[in-house]
Image 1: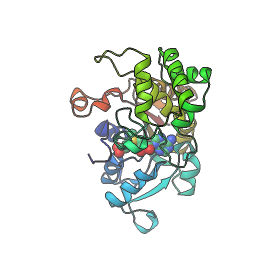
Image 2: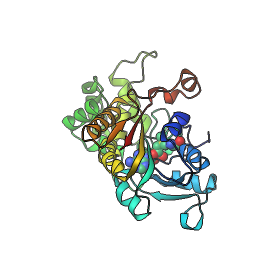
Image 3: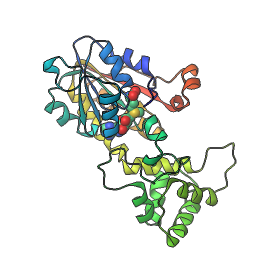
Length: 297
Ligand SMILES: C[S@@+](CC[C@H](N)C(=O)[O-])C[C@H]1O[C@@H](n2cnc3c(N)ncnc32)[C@H](O)[C@@H]1O
């Protein structure tokens, strides 16, 4: 564990990736390098990708991993990029025909903890939510620019929020007075629109989830990446994906079934691997995680 991110399903993921000495692995979601560290300790070589520069800086500066060129006996290659481009990134770094690929989807603990990144409705900050700081559209832009129908599509499809209408009306009313700029402004607007019993989940949860998925185009990224990842695997190589909500888990499940139907290999996890009660107790965020693994034939 490190102070950047609390890794989920760490041991089962490494076991199912079947890490072997001297083989190549791609970690498409480097984060705090929790999984990568174990792959390196098991003797694997790693190409670590993250689209958030802060993750790369943490791994390079705080963890002090030796970076850059495996030809000179270094541990790891780090690349700032989106895993939806995993094919070109792998090719550029001589990481084709790899033994394993990991995608541990979504945001890191660092994102939630950093008020200035705007992911948490409990922390006052700019309503940003870009994981990749080079993206041009933030959550503020979406909340202030989308029309009623677009907001409805967004909140119902990506947030599965069934009280979307009063929330949207409240947003429209508020932004007629002034632009919505901060996380707490938006959560207050939502709180006024829908009743919230303190026992239930905060009504801002789903709206924030929807905005985050849209800003980072998360579902399309996973959809694009999975076939490319399978292509990059050597025979017997494994693709492991950890998802955190039903929208992304559905994409992974369907893609793996399709790969199996096409005769590309077999699903190793007939049922997804989920965290133990003990892990959930230590790290509540792990409660919704699901790990699925596919092996190329
Ligand atoms: C859940 S964290 C990964 C944590 C990591 N496995 C660990 O144990 O420390 C997800 C990380 O993936 C990154 N990420 C999410 N979507 C990405 C994408 N499409 N391309 C590249 N990186 C992405 C995020 O910036 C974040 O740092």
